[in-house]
Length: 360
Ligand code: KG4
Ligand code: ZN
Image 1 (spheres, rainbow, N blue to C red):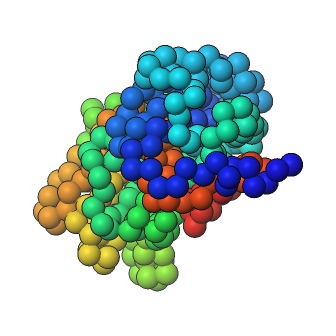
Image 2: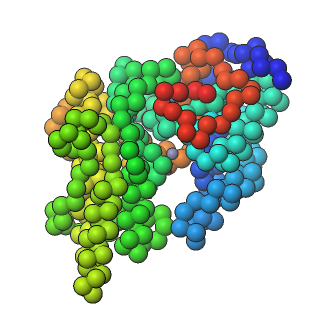
Image 3: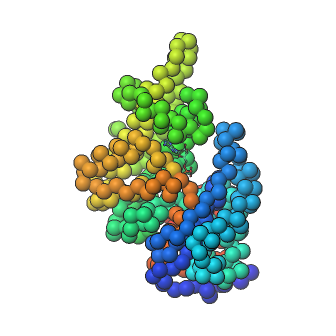
């Protein structure tokens, strides 16, 4: 194949590029159009209803749903933005991390569009997209900031100098992601899948100080070795033991207090480590993204403690925190504005794409 094609079409540095963003890393087919830092349209088709009865995402079902939703979602986004495919300056697509089958549908579709239009293609990192989307809501990023990306699949703490080129991974979860831990605790408490929002709602009715659950990697040697890493598996096990003890005694589980104590432990660890990173690295801005940033206790605690520390917290509205096309278009726009060269048209998907790569 002609590996040089996308470079030949490279638009150079465009200050207000029109970007088509495509996201298919999990169960959402997201397509958006962004001009510079302005969001023109954002359309999402989700296959979550098809997975709910299995209690988790079924990759084959998700891939097929992307295949069916891809063209209609592109059409809907172009119509909503009132632009033609030919007007687009560049195409951005999630190259990873994510489910390999889901990613493949999006990347193959995006390659076809790039070939058909002759426009450059940028295969971008989904996790960094979760932070990048905030520029569409709250305006240009400051010179340096800390980003906390929390969802069902990721829990990462980033130091960002330039979202297109200068992202350093400070830490990540060593086991479960925060949302994943919520979904597992939801299952323990007999709540529907995905459990995160249900546990959150139940927690609002409980006493957060009634049960003190462990905060992983926050003390002693563990903290020294992993100042910005997270671990939620010990917490999840502690919750499971607590719930089982009640069941063994034939007593009713104090579900609201369990949910509240658990939510408090997760929010406490996330906020403590994110603000410590701000202090250490001299940042006065914390950007929080990913589907878990819907969590009400995380939002409250972050706002409260950040204010005490003189840090501004930026969290996009929920619809831009869950997986969507806008986050990918936003990151594509940042790359084009910074003059980054496009990806090659033989770019692979990378289900474990590292945070050291903004672009594939
Ligand atoms: O970003 P996202 O939509 O998909 C992934 O990339 O994972 O995040 C979804 C995750 C799920 O685990 C869901 O249960 C969790 O975020 N979640 C919540 C809340 N809303 C969504 N967890 C706790 N509290 C919430 N309010
Ligand atoms: Zn995500």
